[in-house]
Length: 311
Ligand code: NDP
Ligand code: OXD
Image (tube, rainbow, N blue to C red; front, side, top):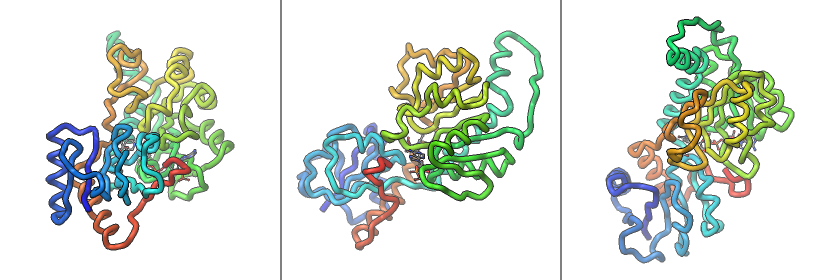
């Protein structure tokens, strides 16, 4: 049986993945989508946010290894083969990258860099009041692989951190909440809100007017998860009314963000081109290869996606 690699990759990226996977899986045969292969011989697919329909017709598939942490697009594919286990990517390098990005966003907002950038355009020399980290309250939506690491790094810098997840969690150094009342408690004490939730039917559109209204006036948001979490119109309105002071956005419902989109030129929105935590081919290929070896040897790799929960 053989492997199939499918992603939104350039020819050069496909070649890089093939080279890295071959180093760790020398005895496996790996096909790329534009090569000639018998679909019946593919039993494991390695996928990176693949277009819908990519896995249709692979009747002997027994494992899907995602090379992305988020599997929302994969799960939304109506042709996704049923009952095939999906393993998500958990990679310390990805976690480190996300942590660095979240720290950069929080420190920029905490030290008011966006406000000083706006002042600079008017050559305005004005020192703004500056609290220290322990006086800045950070709220994190999602306390999974990424949210937990981000929360702990911020707590180490002495920020006042709290987090929210589906189940009740205990994470050292932070206050943890769950459920609807937990979300309300988190929001009312949050100056900077970071979104690291998976995109599911329960979390789609969660960054909306109702949520913004529960934050203290002048709070900032950082969306590092998915564009589908954000109601764009509600964000623009909340910024216009001063309910929110700034938004740093790494992800968008349409990517690349269209040239004419109002976010590009908004003085209170910072746009990043989905770079918070880009998959590192070298480390991710090794992790995927170890998972495949374990699977071939009879054990089920982790973490498995719970299709019913959507993450
Ligand atoms: P995990 O699955 O490890 O964690 C998800 C967290 O969200 C868990 O704490 C989970 O709760 C919580 N959660 C899920 N649904 C709800 C809900 N309805 N209400 C409250 N909490 C909820 O995911 P990761 O941390 O690995 O990744 C998070 C997301 O980050 C990915 O899905 C992806 O969209 C995004 N991402 C973005 C990248 C970028 O470059 N911008 C790069 C990589 C990922 P519980 O713990 O109770 O299950
Ligand atoms: C991911 C991403 O989910 O890059 O891995 O967004």
